[in-house]
Length: 109
Image 1: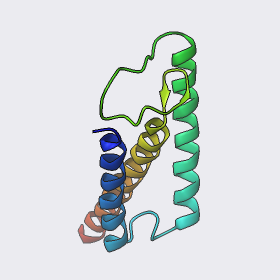
Image 2: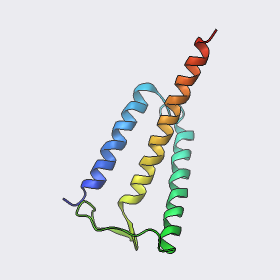
Image 3: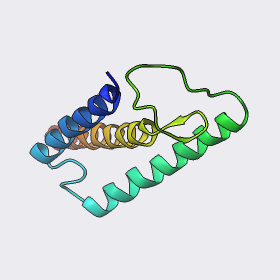
Image 4: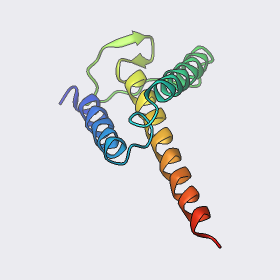
């Protein structure tokens, strides 16, 4: 089913966003900083992908789950969405771990 991969990425991002909102971890704690971190991380990883594609290291596989729209050769439309999700997830997990560490340090005598 074309588009299933993109739908999975978006649903996963929505789940992480719901946890983020519930516990005010990243985007709901400091939205400007979070957005900048995700955009910068996505841009860096996309540049890395483009360099890998140019070097012949990265190639797009054939999958019926992709929409079939390429932004460039071997760069499917889903890739920037995946990279943004990866950055969002990493930022949210980092914020959760940082909060847990802070709470543990506050409890220590």
